[in-house]
Length: 242
Image (cartoon, rainbow, N blue to C red; front, side, top):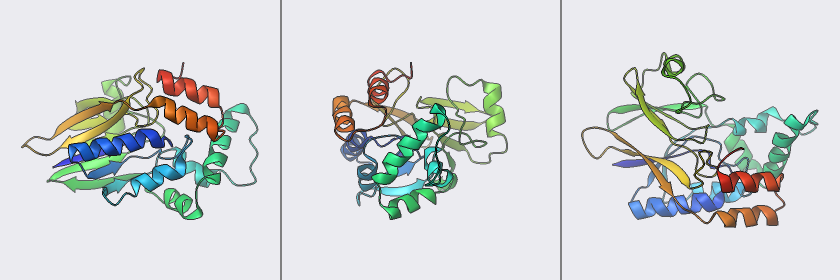
């Protein structure tokens, strides 16, 4: 059995569509979703429609830090700085393009989820077991990872947040940051997601990278008047914040 792990879609419906097509090609229907699904990106409602595809069996779905914005930002709030202005405009865009029941669903997602698959225990988090705002990837030292996963009982930890994939093992725990479907930040603008392969005696962690028509999501962002369009275009194309 194989399970796909999807994270950091960020409203990129074009990337998610091609991910789902890839899953169908691979014969994978079971998925785990690690948050940051709709913000910040130009196609929030379409992304949710795709994820509610009847052909997908969702084993776990947790929130990311951007889903927290729905509860943290009151309707009458006014940003006091440019740092606050960007997330506020992304929040307003998503809110204007989502139905109330969709927002309610995203707001109520758990911040972590533990499950057992084929006898193997798995912990799903967006960032780390300690914080939704931190990450585990190749930029984090082993000592820092030990602190981040201390107290975890599960055998496998799945995460995202940094938009950079990572596979490792620390203190006997398998750790898998599956990267980002809709907004990679590792200088490779292909889709990145994870596959858990339970087909043999030992669990295999696979990072899947696939191409998609990047220009299409940029065209849609332009058509929909997505906030900070030039910045979004540069990040999507370069897969980098710089």
